[in-house]
Length: 238
Image 1 (cartoon, rainbow, N blue to C red):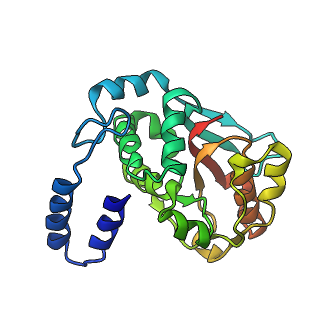
Image 2 (cartoon, rainbow, N blue to C red):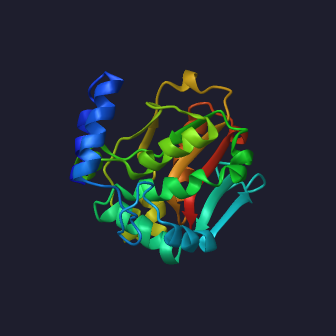
């Protein structure tokens, strides 16, 4: 956590050369490790743990084009929400371990052929968190991974479109009915002219009931976006 905050402070410098030098110094003090086994590794993922993730990886797309209850037409995901990836995502999200995004991103870098179906999209919009939650956690866990995925598939992340206007209870602490109520009317769309007529991929880390991404998509539709231009991407699906 400390290393993550230092790196973001370093990136406040504008000169690329200064950033590179300072990041090298930071990595000497806080060397990268494989977040799964804890061993030192410059790629944040050792071969042994990479093979473990390989066994869990299963890129899939669920088609919701005929499902009127969904405000999007499809959902792409890389894992089922269980076992090793589940433990990683829980630690990443709730135990102040932002560096885990490096491990997940390192694994996904080698899966570029599975991303071909995502290249039909024009932009990525990250599911937002409230200002209060951002301040408490220090980072948006979905945002860190989304930036790496955006690099892999050469898509632009469009910021300042979706905002969370209420600080709600964590979805993981609620039952199915409570989850649906918890996210209603908590998002707002702005600058919609930036994304008109573009194919949009909404990104979140975990898909459980789908209420969060469905509400985000609904917010975009109410702002004038065509449902047929909205897809969902998550790391894992429950």
